[in-house]
Length: 411
Image (cartoon, rainbow, N blue to C red; front, side):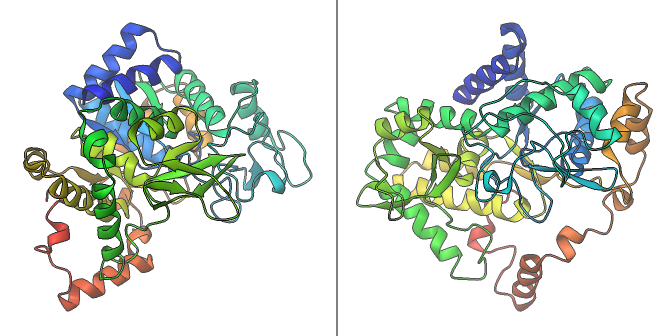
C-alpha cells in the first residue's frame, strides 16, 4: 500500500494537482481502498465509460469522498470492434474518428504507444474535422495540444471535461499502464520485496503462476484468464507484442530479437524505459491484490479477478510466504461489479454532460433508479458465450462454490 501511495501521488502531480492534493489522494485511497478498474482508456463521454463514472460518482458523493481514482487500461487498440473503441466516438448518430487517424495508424496499434503526435479531431469518413455540431462544441472544450500518445490525450481531455462540466467537487485521478509500469519498477527496486525476491527471484514462482494459468485454461475455467502474454508486454513503435518467459528471459516472437533478462533490476529498467508494460494480471497484482484494494469492474472481471487472486495464492505458496497468504485469504469482497451498471436504453452522454453544467439534477435522478431497472437487460451476462459456458459447468457440478480456484473470491 505504501508503494501504491507513491504511485498515486506521482500520477496526481502529473495530472496537474499540487503536492498537498496529491498526498490527500493517496491517503484517501489508504483510508478507503477502492479502485474503479472497469472502462478502458476512453473519453469521458463514451457511453461505456460515462455511465460507469456516473455510477461511481453517486457512491463517492454519498460517502463524502474527495477523490475518484481509476485505472483505465491503455494496452488496447484504437478499434476494439467496428467503429467502437478509444479511437471512435458516436455523436449525433455518426461514428467519428477521435484523432482523425488513417486506418494505417489505427489497425494493430495500441493507444498507449508513444508514436504521436495525436490531436483531437472528431473527423468523419470524408476527413472533415469537427464533423457535426456536437463534435464542434466538444472539440472547443478539449485541449488543442499535441500529445505523445492517444492515452495521454484521453487523460488530459477527461480532466478538462471533468473539471469544466461536472458540478461535483470530487477530483478525478486516472492511472494508466505507464503509471503501473513505474509502480512495478518501484517494487522491483526493493530487493527485499516479494515482487523482487520471490515473484521474479529465480523465476520459479513466476513459472508456477504461468503453469497454473495454463491449467485453468485446460479445464472448466477456460478462457477467463488467458495467457496472452507472460506477465509483461513488449512496447515499441506504437504496438504491444506478447512476450514468453523462456530460459530465464522474456522474449518476443520471431523475427524480433527483443529479450529482457528475467531479473528484477533489468525488468525495472525496461519498465522505466517504456520498453515493456505490465500485463493485466501484473496490473491487478500491484494495484489491488497485494495492497488489498477493492476492484470495481465489469461482468467478466467478477470471475477473472478472483481467479487472478487464486493464481497469486499459488505463487505465494510456492514462495513460502504464508503470512501474506493468510492476509489474502482474509479479504472481504475484494472485487465487485461496478462497470456498466447504469445502462440507459437511449442515453446520450454529451447531451447529459452539457446538462450537468447547469445543475446536479441529472445525477440525483439516476440515484433514484432501482438497480434492476438501471442495468438494462444484463446482456453482458446473458448473451456472453463465456458466461453460458460457465453456467453449463455449474449445472454439471464441475464448478461449485467450493472449487479450489473460487476460494479466493472473498464471497
